[in-house]
Length: 401
Image (tube, rainbow, N blue to C red):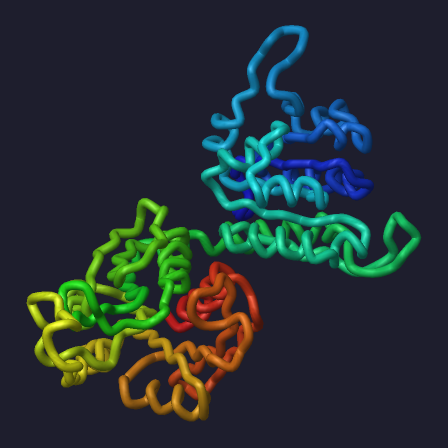
């Protein structure tokens, strides 16, 4: 069966010359078995008529918040709940900016803000608008929210110029959607353990040893696994991000020893374990039960002890039918160090971050990684949003099952 068969798709159309391609996109979606509701901006109607779109979709086209002659209210909330995905094609610079900053002044943007399903954005504009820093920043912001950006192609533009800004061809947009939906159940029935965030090792009740991990990569992996049908246990250190998918059970911890204890509880009945947390290597040997006061004593000497290696501990317990994935953040001899960790910890693959790669590592919304496998293969993933990198990592795990 086609991956789009029976899917509910909201097709958003903005006011750009590429709107003529939306007719073909709509026809292809209907042909693939999808049920499509078109939401068009007022400017979009200057380029393509609602009559054409309604004839193809077999549904009235939604543009305004209510129908003027009847007063019928069009609920953006209901549309957001109905949709299995939302596709905005073409997405103009204006709408992209409104989406990025929550400016809900038309039906399309309010529907986007109400959407509970994946959102695919296919930009279309002139090359100068496309490469303007504000447009690039808005697209990066949308990607950081978890939206899927379908990059425009290069070619001849309506302005007479030639460059990047052509909306991707409808056939390729449909392929993006088919690829997404075809993988949404490939982890169905699997139990996945993921660790995320930093660990805090107490010095006293108000101070700790920790690191700069935001947990964003681990949470992106949890969301991706859950969206593909997995039952996810997310053992998380202290972070500000939240898991949103109902298939994720978040277990909060603070220290490395707590993280190990919670991980061991679920590892034996997990099919996959992804050790994404930035676990502190050391902890104070004798944390104080009261705040260490600067005024009343000399500078304290903090004796450190090694924390348990969670990945290595689970690696020693791993069965042949389990997959164990580690992470390595390195500053030098990256590939050599990652390969050594892969071998010593009995991992099936290890994801390497280099602190020398701009836009990768702690505290940012993007990542650039290399995935080393036990069979010697290596997959390089270029700089992308962490949600997109999560897709690539999970794809490699699925291949190994």
